[in-house]
Image (cartoon, rainbow, N blue to C red; front, side, top):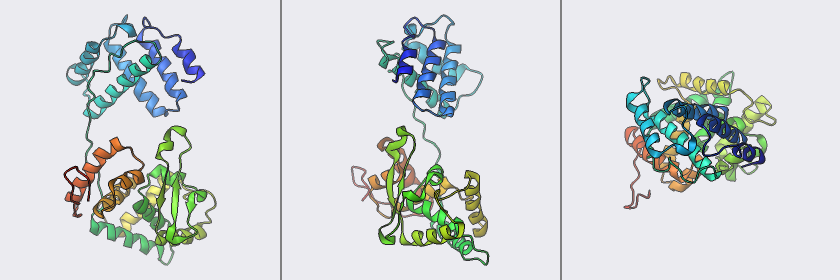
Length: 314
């Protein structure tokens, strides 16, 4: 904790009511650089717990049974439905809050430690089939070479397909993050400004084909610092231009291209840890992602890689 967070937590004791403890935790999360969305969601989750418990309930008197009763109320007895995903997040909020209280020396034991975290498997994402992949690239290439050429859709789409970058990572990409002097050994650096996201930073290779497209694009649009100096919405429209040009029913998105990129790597036999690093995700996250990729391969006409008895992709 920094000095401000320590000063706040120093006023919190076992006999403190839940509401002021939640406010102290909110300040701590803010000091840690958490987003406004995270602050709002986590504090709302704890406020709901506060509304369930008796008004005079202190943080030191909250038991594991209290928390389990609260979760049962959310699932079965509250008038407002609670989706599995929301329930999972609310359990995460509870666990984070009480872990903070124990770590700060306010509580000696953690009542949330034995609460079972419910994992939610989200639906399979949408990807391009092999045929759609070819159609999309051909449509983007047609836009690039039209009478009034626009190399932006091709440059953007090929980059995501080759690197698995997220939308935000594309928007944050700067020209000094590119190492493309040698097109045959070119790569980009994915960087983050916030220290807590530094673990996502990585170096990803790009093809000579993309380097050529980028130079063409950069010259036409006089790119100086930011590689894609447009709004998030404008970049989405560029992908939508490809959708229309390819006459596709699916709407091409960053998420679709990112998953397609990972799927192609998997079916081409790329080592799973290299795919994980390329995606910028943890080993824990990879477990669910790898299972989804295998299901996506089966459903979308990609060759499904064999596995060793230990589950390693050959």
